[in-house]
Image 1: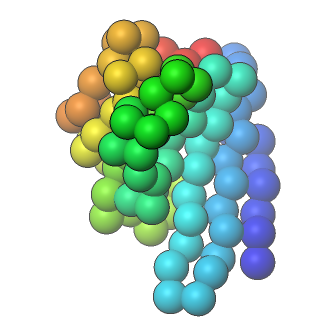
Image 2: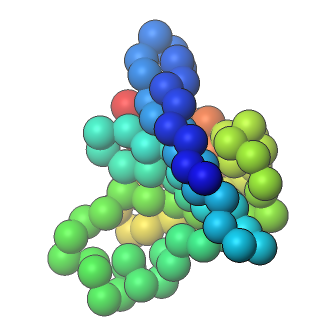
Length: 100
């Protein structure tokens, strides 16, 4: 099952996506610039093999809901996200604000 839901943040709309898969759930909150995602995101791949794409993305681990993804500290971020001011340790919500 897949659920797509708009979320209002600071007067702007971002999109939350939840995909239920066997034994796991993929969680994403996205803006026009970038996104945060659950532990399934391979930040190393984005930084190394896809670096030329300048993807703005960050990962939080151990989350099971969109609410947890927004409140959890980020575990890792892409180089391009870091250049934007998105840093490991900040919450997903703080990162999304920087991506607006």
